[in-house]
Length: 400
Image (cartoon, rainbow, N blue to C red; front, side):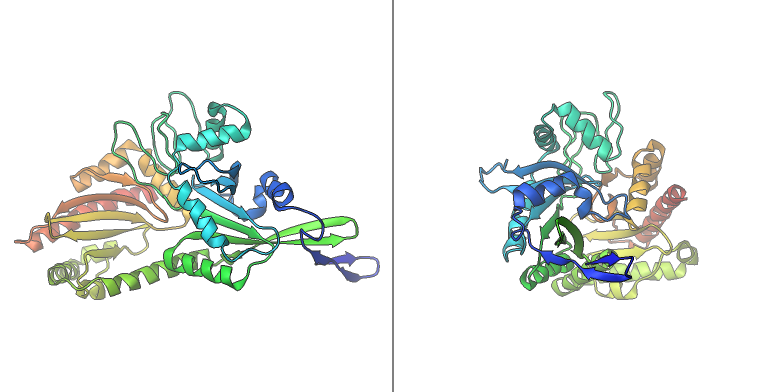
C-alpha cells in the first residue's frame, strides 16, 4: 500500500504490520471489528451477500463440547455462517476445526437460533425473530405466513431455518449445507489446498478472507481480501464441482441394460416428435447408452431442466424439476411458484400426482413420480412427455 503525496507527485510506501506487532488481539480486536462491520467479509457489489451476526464465542453445543465458535451469522439465504478468526497466520488444522463447528451447527433448529440471537441482543425472542425476518426480507405479523430461506411456512414456534419441520404437514428438506468463512492474516499452502479440494470436489462453501494491517505514522489501516473463491470464479467452481461429481458417478454406476433400453426409447421418441424438440427437449444419446438410473433433459433456453429417475423395485419414474439460473432469479422464480396457489395447483394437475415442494442448494426442486409400464414402454414415454410438456407450459408462464 502506498500513500500519495499530491504536492510532490510521489508515493510513500506504507509498511504492513501484524496484529501481534501492534498489540492487537484476536478476540478483543479483530473479532469485534468484524462484529461491528460484517460487511468487510462480503462483496460490496452484491446486495444478497450480507451477513447478520447472531452470536459470538458460541459454545452451546448439544454434546457439551467446550469448543467455542468465534462468530455465528446468517446470510441472506437463511443459511448459518461459521466464521473462524485467526490472529496473523492460520494454523494447519483451521479447516478441520471449522468443519467440526459446521457439523455441530447443522442440527440447530430455528427456535434455537432465535434463542441464541435473543441472548446476543440481550432482548426477547420476539424482537430477535423480527430482526431475522427483516434481514431476510420478510414481513412478519401474527396472522401472516413467514417465509424463511425462501419457503412458505406457517407462523409457529416450529420454524427451522436449517432443518425445517412444519406442523401437520410433510417435512420439507431444505439446504442443510452451512457456509464457512476463515479469516486470517495469511494462509499457508496446506490450508488453501485443502479448501480448494473440498470446494471443487464436494461443493462445500468455504471462503478464505485475508486481512492486511498497515501502519502509517500513528494511523492504522486494515484491508480484507477474499482469496477463495477468487472474485468472478464462483459459478465456474460450482460447475467444476458438478462435473467432477458426474465423473465420479460414472465410475461408480454400472450400465443397467433395462435402464439403457428405456432411455434409448425415450431418445427415439423425441426424434420422432419434432414438436417436443422445438419446445426445447434435447435427446442425449451418450447419457442413454450409459444405462444409468437417472436421465436429464436440459431444456434449451429455459430456467429449469427435468430429471427422470427409474425405479426397478416399484415400477415408477421419479420426476424432479431443477431450476438452474443465478441465485436471485432462481429465488424469485421459486418464490412466485410457492406463493401462487393457482400455479402450484396447475403443476400438480399437469402431473396428475401429489408434488413434493422442496428447496436445496444450488437448485430448487419440484418432485413427484409417474408410472413406468414395463410391458408398454412406448405408451409410458408418450404419457410422460405429455405430462412434462404440460408442466413446461405452466413454468414458462411463471418465467415470463
